[in-house]
Image 1 (tube, helix red, strand yellow):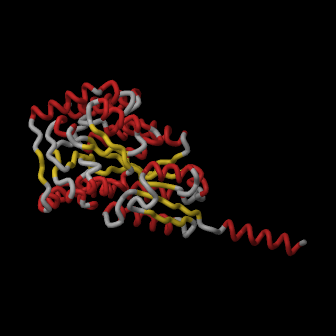
Image 2 (cartoon, rainbow, N blue to C red; image 1 turned 30 degrees about the vertical axis):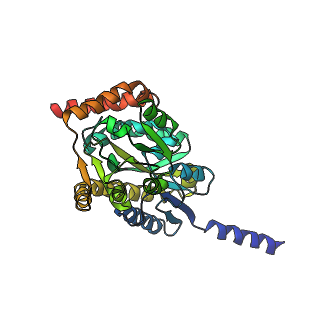
Image 3 (cartoon, helix red, strand yellow; image 1 turned 90 degrees about the vertical axis):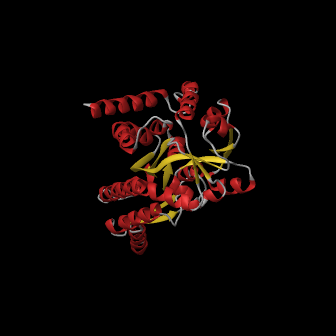
Amino acid sequence: MIRSALGFLCLALALGAQPVPLKIATLVPQNSSWFRILKEMGDTWERASGGRVKVTFYPGGRMGDDGDVIRKMRLGQLQGAVLASPGLAEIDRSVYALSIPLAFDGPGEVYGVLDRMRPGLERAFAAKGFVILNWADGGWVRFFSRHPVASPQDLRRQKLFQWQGDAHTLEIWKSAGFNAVPAPAPELTTGLQTGLLDAFLTSPQVVLLMRYHEKAPHMTDLRWAMILAATVVRREAWDRIPADVRPALLKAAQEAAERLRRDMAASEASDLEALKRAGLKVVPVDAAARGQWEAMLRGAHDRIRGDYVPAPAYDEALAARDALRKERRR
């Protein structure tokens, strides 16, 4: 009996000594600076925890697109993810307030608004069982296409990729007269090759890394929106990490986000130059064409504010933006 009790105790101690696994998925390509920084963050986590946390990354969409990843997190198959705005919006659509088309002048404005909205956003995610460890971005997204796009009418003649699973955004595009086609993000390359898709929104860095420009050689010279990103873990997984370890992990995650922000800001110009050298053609958008885009967005305002972005978050974001602009003018 004593031997049984001792055996049970040893087993319990051995189990207790097992590191907490953190399996983290992302669409970020393995050969990108993004992934290098994430991998270094994971190495820091393991060192800072003294081996009590074991991090495994699954880059390049190996676990599916963001919707698949979120489902696997909820099932406990994954503990975390680096999600872009469409994935974050599957948890809470308020995050789209930072990606309202043509609403922000630059990254300083986006992050200034995020600073004001972050406590509320993080509470909303926490209420749904997710902990946000950091915020970063994937750069400014533009339209890339097989055929030139300067105006909304040009885009309406092409098949526009839309993230699968986001029915609200899909319906907004369709109601505005666009031929939006839902598909998983990892299938964009195949869609361009087969003609199922002609156009899409993403950043120059993603295009360069994924070589999308080989099938979509035109870029519209219009900063549409910044694509936000965040490292997210399930609350249950975060709570399994020893309490004395969590502050160091959070600090490393936030330092990684700062590096990612600087990297994205610094690389945009060089990414665009590399794409131009590879044959990308930049399609200019003059004042008249920009006016058409703005008119199209005004026509969809009631759906963007409400269906795309929950109205309270939409109003909060634009109020914060206007306050920042007022402060700058002083």
